[in-house]
Length: 217
Image (cartoon, rainbow, N blue to C red; front, side, top):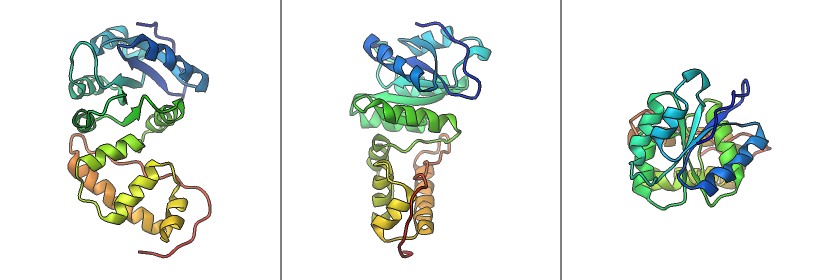
């Protein structure tokens, strides 16, 4: 496990729990993007021991969905959240049930190991800003798998947002107003909160940007 550097004031600080050395080494690139790297450990217990001092503790923990100690991801998320970490799940597996349980336990984001570094960096910055959930392609898939009672339009909006489209781009593509996209997204958020009541969370809406035209639903 690595040493704990002093966090950069105002910027995100990230600890890593992953039992693959190549992954931990690869994540060092985060330091090139204004992210302070904290401790690195192969288990949650190892991280909690390395960052036992609350004053030196990272604010975000990147957690592998499966670890060699056979600990369950939902238990790991609860343990990390219990001492104040926001948790981002880094996964290279299609264990949908485990990902849903991680969300229900309070994970703030799911990021696929197969993706480039950009989605993880964006997730870190969004979660650090205070948003409860970073909406990614993987997150959308996990939400769909939970069989949320979404209308066709809501499913389409969620897919577009997970693909990175802005609020205005979604509105133009679907011939809606921006306000209509907001209304649909509030409905999505309500369905999400009912499906994942522990803790109550909100899906991050699509970012705003660019011109838009369209009609209301």
